[in-house]
Amino acid sequence: MLRAIAILIVVLLVAHAPMLLNDGLFMDDWLVLKPRPDYFVDIDFLLNGAGHPIFFSYDTFANWTGAPVVVMVSLALAGIVFGAVCLMLTATRLDLLDRSEAVVFALFVWTYPGYQLWAGKANAVYVFSFGLLFVGAWLLTLAFSAQGWRRVLLRVACACLFVLSFALNSTVVLYACVMLGLFVATWRSGAVAHGFIRRAWLAAWRCALGYPELIALPLVYAGTLGIWFKRIGLYAQHYGAHLPTLGELANGWKAFFDAGYRDVVAHAIGAAIQVPASFILAAVLVGVALLLLRPGTEATARRATALPLILAVVLFLGLSSPYLIAGLRPSSQHFYESRHLLLFGVPAGLALLAFKRQAERWIGPTAAVAMLFGLGSILWIGMLWNDYVFMQARTLKQEALTRSLADRIQPAATVYALDDRFFDYRSRDVPFGLAEVTGMLRLAWGNQPFFGFALRAERPDILQEMEWKRAAPGTAFRHFDPSGPQATISLTAGSGAASDRALVRRYYACRLLARCDVAEFLAQLAQVKITVGPIAGILPLNGASEDVSPSR
Image (cartoon, rainbow, N blue to C red):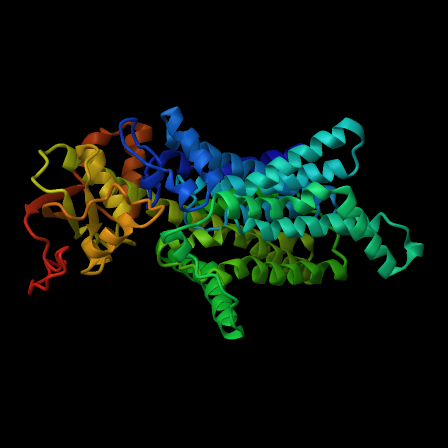
């Protein structure tokens, strides 16, 4: 078992190694984390607007340390490693999976590339919460057969871990599955002579009386949020909670399937054809791991073949339902909109497990593991690295722009539109968000009431929209002022610019092999020009209509 755990940890650390080199902030990270000690953030909105007390605690601690990026990366890696190991241990202890199946299943869940925000800093809390759920499940399996004070301590630890895992609200669905597993374990320990119905009723009663803290936990947590940490203002309006119609559910489930699986596989195949290097390295990594694992040679019972597929379908529908009720849907086109997909590696892993168990009847267990689990893991890890490359290139572009701004005197303006022409290169591109542009301005020129946005990402009435948002109750944008003098920042590729992959490769060579100076490398990436004056194509804050031609 120790050998299997070591293999799992090594493969996960290699797969997520690019996270260690990415110290950039993304999207809403700029609103809650301090890239340097004198950078101002006001995260009270997490308590008094967004209703995220656990999130607030993590962010407060991270900022207090003075190294929030290090803290958040550490949380993410801890969640990945401990979550995967405890998932594996729980599955093997309950005799649900054999050792090789448990290792590859955990690897599949924790390298899921449909969630593109693995390198996100504030969202590391989500990754850590996901991991804590599996740690809690492992401790619960230990508590089930423990006695005395050991049992009490394990159950207290379980309750604490499960509460912290609720920082990611959708883990409640997986928590319900854990409680269902507890019920099944209690049911199996009952006397067969009682009959099925009486035995089930007694098992439910024993769970309710024997584990009242776990039964009441989600209700107490929801009640606490509803009484002391209500969502107000922008955040209350963000969630359009309603009972969806059958048509809405069908369309929503299709959106989750497309973004979570179809697009991931299609993009992975396209990336493997265009740039096969990452997938070749992934094949070597997975191949070595499978050789060391030595998969079993016994075929699985037919009943155990269908069950994972049924669970995959049920979990997919269950995990997506809370988002559909809240009116939220994912997107594979914008990395930040993939944040709803973190848990969807679990249904994918269960489905692959079912296909593997069916295939082993035709080609044998060893070949089935190699063909299905092996190929699936190669596709997953190769695409994961592809996303890490994109996120690292995005960080480099931010750093190049920030350094260029910091090296010049601030113009007489506080409202800036970013005319981003860097994207003309043949690379994946997502426009900078307004939190990112504003954050870069404040990082370069100090804590002033800046407001920045990307021209091609916002509507002409962005100033009016921000003026309304900054005055809304519980807002995160109170320090954004869209009423000041205006200027336009033109960002174009410099002499050192290249495609994402080439750019990141050169950056790694600079940082790890000292083949160049990182500051000099960043200085060559972008050319920046600032033009002071009204922003073309943007309506003035007073709402007056002006005939202006876009600058793009």
